[in-house]
Amino acid sequence: MVALIEAARQPHFPAEIVLVISNIADAVGLDRAKALGVDTVTIPHTNFPSREAFEAEMDRTLRDYHVELVCLAGFMRVLTASFIEKWPHRLLNIHPSLLPAFKGLHTHERALAEKAQSHGCTVHYVVPELDAGPIIDQAAIPILPDDTPERLAARVLEQEVKLYPKALAAVAAQLAQK
Image (cartoon, rainbow, N blue to C red; front, side, top):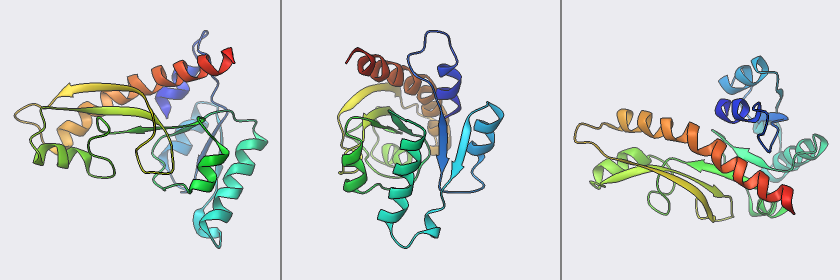
């Protein structure tokens, strides 16, 4: 998230970060966003009687801020098909694997357990099926003999902070041409 905000501050970046939403009131990202001058909103999912009601409030908030693209970064809730369909090709996610490999959680542990030769991260459009949307971009790194899940995660994160802003810029520039 911070990498996206910092990239968007560059003069020729084709997108502006106008809002950070979290469902967790004490999420560290909220403080970081505020410190960088970005509006923040907390929408605790536990305050709503259903997932649909929670998502309706998120949708309303995004529209109130005139958001055109949503970048998921550390948002650890699976979105419903109904919400996703309201934002076709406007919901981006970053996933810590080279999709379609290692969908879901614990990607670094699984890559090491399966003795994969490479690993990395993927920015993709969100679709109702988990981690299955069209790929926007990927960054690959080799898995080293002494990698642990923590070391591998740290090296993947180094790629994520480069890849996500690059992918957002490409998608935003494409939308601006339409």
